[in-house]
Image (cartoon, rainbow, N blue to C red; front, top):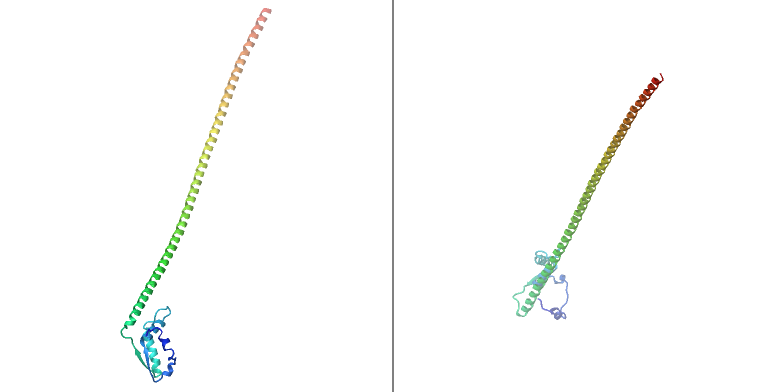
Length: 222
């Protein structure tokens, strides 16, 4: 009945007996105690109260008592006595405080779970961003290397063109120099041939003069 110390008070005259010894007798039962026992003890695999636990518990125990030919008489609490109102109010407050604590604990657990999920999501996003940045950096490096290779190829092509132009210019210069020397040689040859012809033309005049001298000498002698 919720009276503290009642069993200690009844201990000197009370004794424990087996249910089988109550055959053919009437048994007074506190229905409230049975209800609380069934609601607290009968739980499922998840730890929750079994649906209609008090009805199932009453039915099983009544069947057993009837099997033993014991007549149960159930006593239900009436209105709350004035002496017990304070106790009832204190119990209600305790239940409310316990429910509030359970609610706060559940909220904290939920918040911690949400924070953990957000941290994990932010870490994943950061990792993905790093991977994307590294991929972009590799692409930029490859583009820079391609551009540098293109610049080097263009520079080599330009240098090759300059070298070819210089070679062509040198070849042209050599050819022009050979032509100049050939023309000079031809001019020198022409001048030398002219001198020879003039000298050859001069020699016959001397011969003619000799011949005329010889003729004069012949005339005088004759």
